[in-house]
Picture (cartoon, helix red, strand yellow):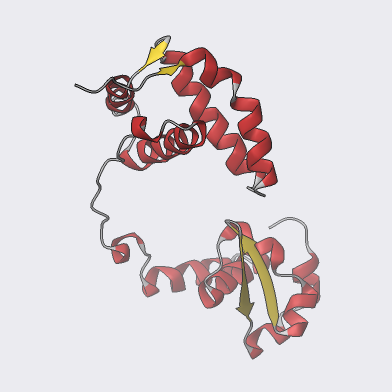
Length: 188
């Protein structure tokens, strides 16, 4: 029988700063680095002094008591990346399998969208109206609205940076008619 591979918790804790430096050199986003480190620290705080694969499997099951599958998988991915970086890929565990629901179930109906636009229009919430139209017509996320500038609209495109990737968003002729005073307001 082959000797089981084990990881010393202290070694794993001591190497976190080096791992952070390596992730920075790999140009990972700071929020990603922060999330990975938080997940790793959460795991190591509960890990025994000598960590085995059954310990990690047990940790994954304990996460099920508090978190949804997507969160559990995200944490396991962070831990697995760290284990592989440390040279302990044989300790990595599989993520939980999940059947994704039909994406259409999470979308609002056209009728609901039009009601929201109508509400914004009759309550003089012009900026909210234009934000909803922009999201619906371009497919951008709320967090990407910061890339929709007056200059971008005038140029017909915006370059959006999200999740480590650039993509181009195109604006239709409709945008040319948006009043500039609405675009420049700070509050919705």
